[in-house]
Length: 424
Ligand code: GDP
Image (cartoon, rainbow, N blue to C red):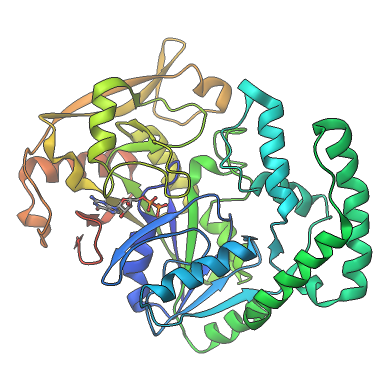
């Protein structure tokens, strides 16, 4: 059986925690898209971890962690991450890397920086991890699959072709140092040696696992609103963030996906530029940012302060619909305990009309939030294990949002730890 854990919004919904928790009952956890541009924060008995490339299931002895073909694989970052978790006493994880995954090259990271510099004020707010140049090359068919590292003839010839092409841009568009083919080839030889122990045909591995009735968890990065097709284009990421793409990016048959857990945070946060209708500013935002998540809402990869906002029912209803949600995991509810009243965005006003349907970007830019204010519960709900034991106003908040988004909230997360979860 295949299950997916994905985000409904802009990312940072708490997917890492939910995946880490659900991994207790899974055999295999697969990353299927994205790269080291976003992180998951996980708190468990080994400590606190910010993972960028490894799946959030690496903390168990019984699981296999897979970097699927859809991932933007940064080999040195992966190595560093493996080392960092082993240093903290986590048993050496069982990791497999798809031979069809493509490699983030050093020049992808440079091009990402150079292009953001060139765009100046019109930049995308990229994390400069090379993700957009990586996926551009993948679809322009000039990327490097992991398996190509093991064919030296091909590699030599391809490196030369790469330099011929990239150096034109470096010289004439960006006015930056050129790539030296010998150095690049050396780097790729190093990458080959680092990754060799992990490489295999992961789709064949997953196919066999399915035949043995194993449980496979697909772990998404970012959320619906960052999907290149269905998100707030062009302020999106460069690979699909949808559960449906999980099957492609892992290499499994689509009909095997039986459960989609969409993670929604009890308020909103976003990183990078782009429309954010329920955004709040000033002291109100600062306080929520400071209290938010586990130690404040700052990017796991960049440390950048996240933009903050109230829960957005319009965006989340759409976000859950596009994921094919079977279950909503509603997270970070504990953080709202300080508020007397909690505003929730229940509609968008666009050109004088109110809608609850998430619009295309040009209309989204004009949208103003229609807010409804719900009473707060004014207490700490961490440690509560049963839904009935939550304060009435807290249950009302959850049930109000469930009704607005139209998908069942079956899990309520009231703290960052593995056990801070209430099943309904
Ligand atoms: P992801 O990218 O979706 O995995 O989200 P992040 O890991 O970037 O952000 C979620 C943050 O919230 C992390 O710091 C988590 O430890 C924390 N977190 C997750 N669930 C909860 C929760 O229910 N309550 C609190 N207080 N923090 C949570």
